[in-house]
Length: 211
Image (cartoon, rainbow, N blue to C red; front, top):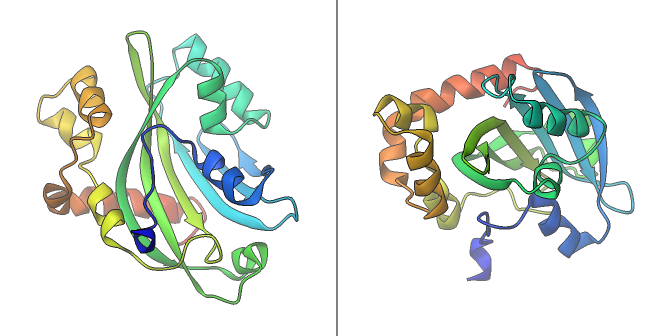
């Protein structure tokens, strides 16, 4: 159903979805260091279609190849494109889909009068050979002109248990990767761990954007 705005998150990058709709997509880096990255994804008319905030994890800091990819990202490459270009596999573990209040500056960037927008928070997990890393927690806020500010059934069915919770249950990284790859999603059980997601949202709020 078209009204569900179904997302193929298994193979496609968000920039690929935007390019399909708007053509060439540009990247405006607002901030990027070893801990946090903020960007706007812009169409050819310099209208922002997505704002993305990434809180980078630290478990890959000792891996030279991950550091090299992160350096390329800090120089302006998109996160997904940087990993895909270097032959990494990518999985996105969706933690929540919800509605946010848009700050004035983001309303202006989106060129919208709407005060509400849809947001999606996810873990960005990558794999190359036998090495698996959680690059960071990514929150995407979508222009209301790109995605309507409403939550549908397809959104709800994507929500999964945080990988940190799965690890606490004794699952190793390979088992977690396999579950993401096969789309073994426990949207009903995910509701039991909302406190974990709320803690992540608090981190995001502290990082500069009240979500």
